[in-house]
Amino acid sequence: MGLFNWLFGDKDKPSKEVEPTEYKGFLIYPEPKAEGGQFRISGRICKEIDGEIRTHQFIRSDLLPSAAGATDLMMKKSQLFIDQMGERMFS
Image (tube, rainbow, N blue to C red; front, side, top):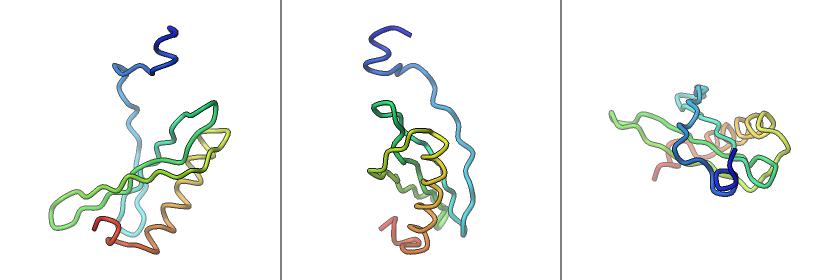
């Protein structure tokens, strides 16, 4: 890995395809972001409404030491967010 790729990221690298998890008709895509040697809780919540795919970017301030931990916590927090907001998150 070159110094510039390490500093600025490799923009040519294709993003890894994430398998969504269905929850109450919503699709949750956990996509933890590497940041300072830790991982930020991040991802997308999607739902088809009236034939259109609506997407909510889900980013939180929590940092965890592993991508797996960030993925697990993202799933729990996004399910709670869906329970609280439902389709209003797309308004």
